[in-house]
Structure formats: structure tokens, C-alpha cells
Length: 340
Image (cartoon, rainbow, N blue to C red; front, side, top):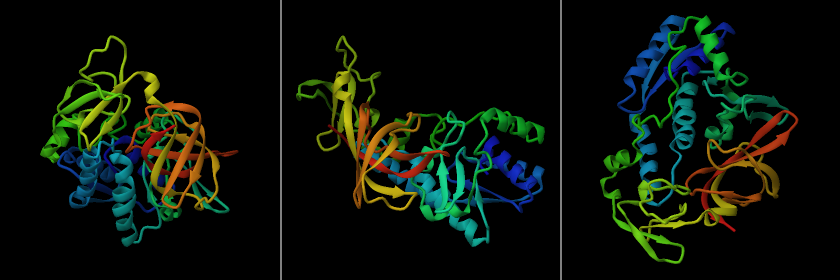
């Protein structure tokens, strides 16, 4: 229970269904107290047991990953990383150690029991779908997962919460990364790893120096605003290089690629050994597009039917299989580079 309307409503629905519930709040940073109070209040209102679990030491793994990726000129996805290692890792293991039969969250994603075992599907309300953020969780957690809000939209969730008298029914959604409440990524990075700021050159694809920067952590692939170079026409960040400490700018056509390579694939289906057709997302708000996935033991290559813009190293490529029940999650991998 995070203290928000989604997990609070999920707990209430499980209780109505006759489940014996315990709410657990993860304390992972110094900004958590207010949300913990909300979660505790909801648990008291529902009459269920409640625990606040201090995982700040465990969460350092997420912060270290966050810094390490930026130092390598990659754009990290801490929510995906946290879901695998902390929420559906450390917290999941804690729930099992307490004898829990199931592990439930307020995510908008569908879990279906099939002949081959449980499978995850894009939520019917695709505007709220959160499947992308769960692409890297381990397959062996799937049998214990429950997502009571899987078939709902957010307005329906708020209506249920209000009907049940939950005080967080109108609580605003969190829009930022939880440990950066003011959305100042660069400031947080400089606080966590002060050595990250290092001046370097801004160049074009031919190596011509266009200007200077004060740290590649201030840039991401596809960025147009704030590149600090006036070209008279739109230019974008097309490459970041941590070795040479350079930011490369170019026109839109240099930002478009036909394929990508990605490493450390995580499969939520039987591990594929042959190429397969899939729908692929390359960022959280990206619409799934058609591609062919070529699996290798420790990597994948993805070739898109149509070239894509702003493929970003460090983000997650998520693979879905088309079926009569909707888009089924096959797995994901960490993007290493865009290729042609």
C-alpha cells in the first residue's frame, strides 16, 4: 500500500472478496512519511493489519543503478529496475516469508491464468496500462500476483474509492520518480554523485564542435529543447558518449533507426529460441509497434517494420504477443544501442 488511491482501492476490493489482507508500505526514501500516514489511515479504516517496512538500505541498489547508468551516458528507468529488485523482489520475498498466499498491488495490468501458467496482459484501458513497468519482474513471481484494478480505468477506481469512503479518493496521482519529488533529475544526480558534472563538447555527427556542455547527464536522446546550440532549424540529441564526454546533435533523420540491440533479456513466457513477431514498446508512453525479435542467450535484436525515432540506451524494450485475449507480455530487455 503506497498511500495512493490505486493500492488503497485494491486492498478494499480484496477485503470485500473475502481475503485476509495485510497492507505493507515500503519506506525507501526520506519523502515517504506523508504517504505512509495515508496508507496507515486507510488500513485502519478498512480494519486490516498494517506494516511499514524500512527498505532504505535495499533501495540504495536503485540509487546506485540510477547514477551508474547516467555516468555511462544511458537514460535509466528506475521504476522498472525497482519493480524487479525491490517491490516484486525484496517486498515480494518478505510477503512470502510471512506466509502470504498472494501478492497484490494497485497496478493497471491484467493477469490471466492459462494452460501454460499465469500470463500478464496489457490492461484493457490502454491509456492507464502499466505493463511496461513490470516487464523485468521475474517469471516465478507470476503465480502469486493479483491485480484487482486490472480491468478498470482511473475514473472507475476513484468512484469505488469514494463509495467506500476512502479518504484518498481524490488524491492526485504521482507523476514523478518517487525519490525525485521536485522532478529535478540533474540536481538529484549531482547530490548522489557529485563527480558526475564534467564539461565537454557538443558536436555534430561529423565531429565539428558546435558548443560546450556542463555534463552529459543533462541530456537525453531525442531532446530538442535546452541543447544550448542555435542552428536555425530543429536539431536533436542523437548520441551521448561517456568516453569522450560529448553530446552529438543532428537533424531528425539522424535520430531515426530501423533496429536496436538490447541485453539481459527477461522472459515472462517460455524462453524463445527462434525469431518471433511482436509488438514492441521502447518507452513507457510509447505505442506498441510491429517488429521481429531475434533472441540470443544474453541479448536480443529487434528489427522494426517501420523505422523509429529516439531509441534510447538504458530504457527498456518490452515485447508483446498478439492474441485473441489481447496483447500478452513476452518480456523485455535493456536497450544498448540503436542500429540500422
